Image 1: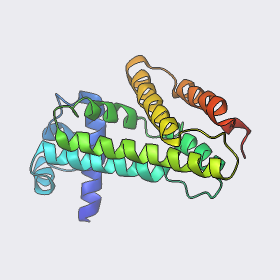
Image 2: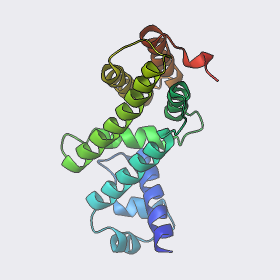
Image 3: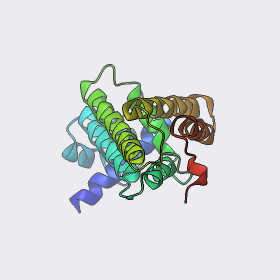
Length: 192
């Protein structure tokens, strides 16, 4: 029951963060977005900061699980990674909530650390798949770490464009696919 309550609070935090933004987020507003009282929220989380840390942990953990692909073929891993990152069925709150917390990272070391972990996970998935693809002869020889850094940077820029400008994330995906074709000699569109 307790984990169900925590899950309810975390989901309500996401909705409230999207509706009110970081600056106007309060425990009362989170309680209003859920079936949980402010007293119950304070029972689970002493401060708004503690709650947002738990929310960010949940957000990042869900994203890491989403992009984790166990496929043996590195081409399938990269294609699966792109499908996960650019999932059109994904939670609409995710990009806005993530952007709200990214904006706070310069001021909150805990947030910054989690975003570094997330970036490391993204780059690790890409670099490992590229290295494996080079070794298997599927990809042109390139610096896998540089490819991974480029992909991570483009994803972050695309995230900003999606939230701030309302741009379709599919445009960012096409940039990455074109980059893979140019750098690796492989197109995700042509894969299984």
